[in-house]
Image (cartoon, rainbow, N blue to C red; front, top):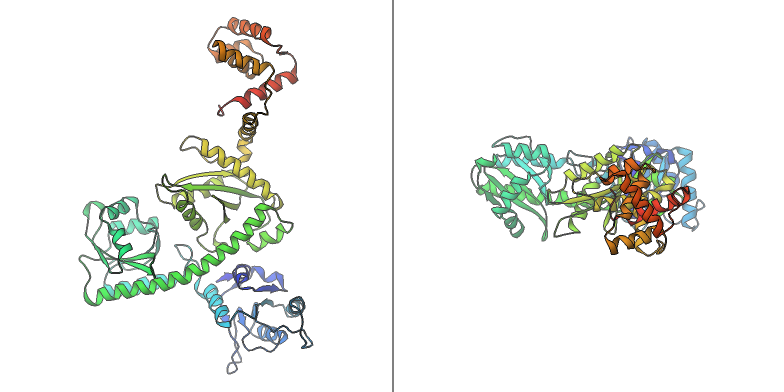
Length: 523
């Protein structure tokens, strides 16, 4: 099952265009049909008009089949049968679609029906959401069948030890397996154990099943693991709970099962990568600014409401690229209609547009993303203020500046949001301007700073305390831990060095800004 809007996004990579009956974009598609001369009762949500002689005939077939959409691969002809342009064909399709109330999907004549049918069947019938996110539901059925054959509980994992599917069988199940399934990934302590035993290294090096002995301290009974591979690329692994190494028919069944899993994962990944590409292109257009932002946000399946831009960087101490790609993969796992946000990679930053009025919703999204990444991965993030669709480029800049704040903050700090941290961002901009030489080299503050540097006085700190205390000598003295008379004397000496004009509001404001720009970090 998939929404027509999302199927159109994916098929766009094959040159398919939606013509007419735009109101059907939100319709759910649950079945696929092909016209059959021997069956006059063909029905389905999507009709593949194989063998049609014209657009009109294809749409009539679709209406008879009670289809929501019809996929047509037309010849370049107009209504009169003469050769026409692509625009002529699209206009004809839109007219017929609106007349019959059927969405027409025009395919490029260069794309074969076998390719189109494979993608449509995969999207509508196989790519429904699973507990692990994106992928065919029959991966769970495969795990069940394999468990029945080998006589042990089966878990299918991706190359990052995240659970893709698992069998219902609990034969030889243990607490480690239960913890893995509940957490949807192998616990870090077990990953460390497997690394110490070189299990992952052996899986990467061989197609033969590898036995992992029991470890009572980790709640682990025996395991037989085999790599899931496409050519030389490791896609994941299959794990079976067993007391000892599998032999004979059971061992062959496990190896055969791994090859079948590889086919499922390749098909799932092809669909996933295509949808990610379409989604990323649309998000990038929104972040860079588009005159047709309302249409783009609709194609992403998001309502035109308040949206926050989230900027994320993920890295490990020894790698600044693999962790970011892993974060992007996690952010885009699951079909678009099952996820709250839409994401894209730009340079070294992951951007996500997330419908969220409250800051806490965005922070929860970041926390959920971080929790799905390996423990060694560090995540820094910034959150833009709520923005209208047309203002997302400004939201991206806000998110970038908040990301820079988070990267310079202490470990454990919550990701800053622009509507809460605009003052820190303003001061950061002022400091950046000061570092580029835009701050005045002369004036009261510059004079006092040079005097402090040469003579070890505390005039700048005293001026800051007095300004922040709004001229209250007692409060300023408390901040400086000195007597009020000391503050009074310092102010007098400072006035002798440079005219402060402390009773001029504009001068006080200018000195406050200058002092803020000279600070190294927000206090």
